[in-house]
Image (tube, rainbow, N blue to C red; front, side):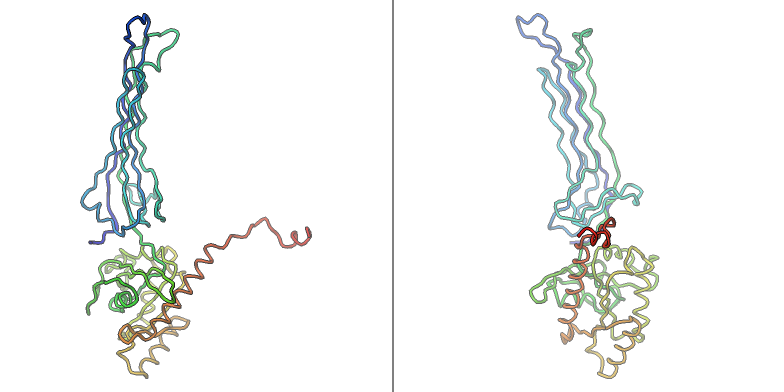
Length: 351
């Protein structure tokens, strides 16, 4: 299935049904009076996050969605039926923007979340509504109100626990294929990965979701290469796994380039917890490997893992480090915020 993370869609909610002009015609009822019913409400347009989807490809082939018009009112005070609703089904992590592609309408982050983005028009009143003491036989009814017509943008940001970042050919897709059941395209040339890939990794009977992001090069945040299109997918991850290829002549510079792009992009990417690893270490001799690990650790300012998807060196250690970092972030998110009105001194006095 082709990956699509942005789509432009035209939607229109249903018009309300018209009210009815009708009078009672039963035999032996001398003054029957008006009995025209109200029109039905037009259908609404909803957007809902559902399971089983990870792309917006459905909206490549159909861009127009229109809810049904409400049924007109009828005699005998019968109200018209409501028009059928339309629901746009999208993957979790989809944001809905207005036509300017900047104004956020809603953000669907959980399966089952459902938002109304266009309300149907109200149905018109029938002539029974206008009956009064001075107008016993009104011959007027209201038309239904028009529905809303909008142009919206759907933008998908994948939801994953950890995001794998690095320069092209850093071994990101190979790592994902080694630790999950995902099968991304792997080849020995830059920008083999053209779209993000998701996989579920398992370590010590615990699972978490990994996202492989296309390679980042210098200037990516300004549109150089293809990584800038997909940096938004890293926004929702809790932890970053930064891979630096052991084949790089200057591993410290390769690390700084990607870090610079993450910080220049903004959206909090530069503040996310990061685990740094030197990948493809199976191609190095022990002396060169130790030297590059020292250079990378100096640039990263912290410990660096060594891993190889071929020899399986360090794979379990990296997965455990990711698992622990994700668990710490979850605890931080779930921890209740302290009450600013609570003061320890006051609490002590109350004892």
